[in-house]
Image 1 (cartoon, rainbow, N blue to C red):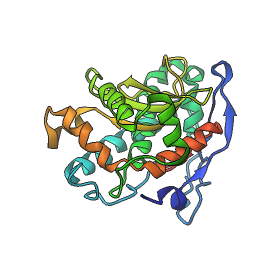
Image 2: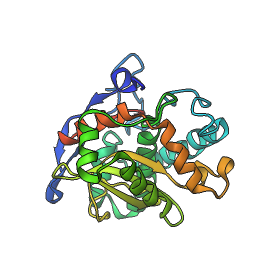
Image 3: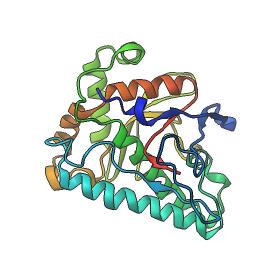
Image 4: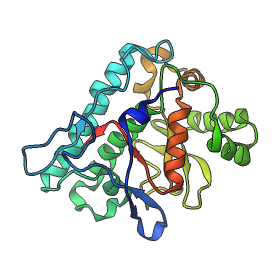
Length: 263
């Protein structure tokens, strides 16, 4: 399993999330990212920056092709980050805390709410997506996450079936998620477009996502064409359960691990 989390991540501080009863994430403000690659914006309004993939673009082959990864990360994810910055800058809003923004969209100016919901969600969702995959992934979870899955669904294979069916059932574009709710319970859900389980009050089942699969066509069509079910089945071979397990432990404490999205 990957040691991406130990190398590149940290447990974030928490914030009260109002009536939802959740504690949701603070993300690094501009210039505060750990390590030697700290980058400070010279503008008055700090911009989000797209980080490199945590592995080479061909590392997930044959499950996900290099061509898809380059297009998905370099064009689609980059586009969400750029459009998010443009929306926030149009109202002079600093971009230092994406988790707080996404978890309380109602506090945004009405003229940018939809753009931030779409593009902020896309930026954050893809950040998680890259980091819960690894070329040495696959297998099954261990430790407390394995026990929680067994308590909720029984066999791991039963959980996989529920999750895969949820992903396959997304109509059009969207995501399937494994999340932790306010009581610490695991649940599987789906969201349309770039919505996130963090987006109260727009999402019926609110929680902290720890695993997600992108089922937009751009995530698989160049390789799998219309065979979404095959893409979902093969995707399990690159899931990084060490990463997901650490996300689970963090979520139980009301935190989220902030990884690839520089802010």
